Image 1 (cartoon, rainbow, N blue to C red):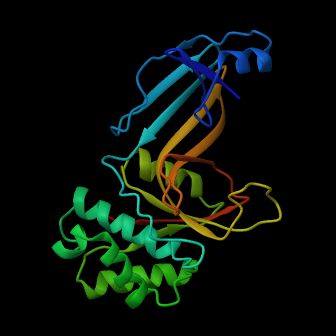
Image 2: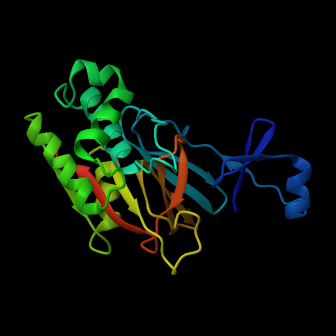
Image 3: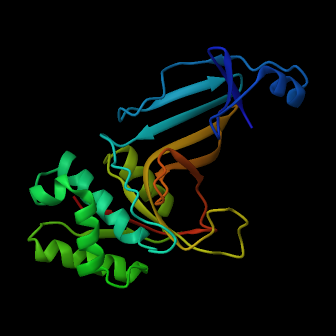
Length: 238
């Protein structure tokens, strides 16, 4: 755990939880962490860094902002279609005004309902059915694009990093339930990554987190990269 001062507060960098001075002193026996902010960590598509003694992190974001749709729940189990709808809305706003009609661009819930009715009638999606539904949508609406996917361990992490940091595109990431992991994210689920945070100690890389919309209506969620519970990454070719 790493802490930094933010005004009169002390913030745990991984969870972004604010703790009191008393809590911090009790935990760390009056050890003070002096934070040097080299550049603000902001969602502007630029690399940003924050460092303490021996510690620093680099943060990358896509351009623009994803809409944080809240239409999925445990009863519906429509996280795959929700992720696809989120990418369509972002692409239509920031890449090309061709991915959605004006009606669907202005009414995301109608878009979501159309997708689960026409392209994902079973609601729950596998890797195959999610990609098939995406390709069918592109064909039916004469959109010159397609789904591109990578499965670990074959360049999975590099693909996600390149797509977010260089192409500035969001990525759908598939999670799966695995006995190899005790993480809360070891579950059958789709999330949307739009940022990356890399951690370094004494110049040595030691951890990467994806910054995601978690598919349940929560943004700015940090999930540690691991092939123990991540099994596919999907983006658009364009």
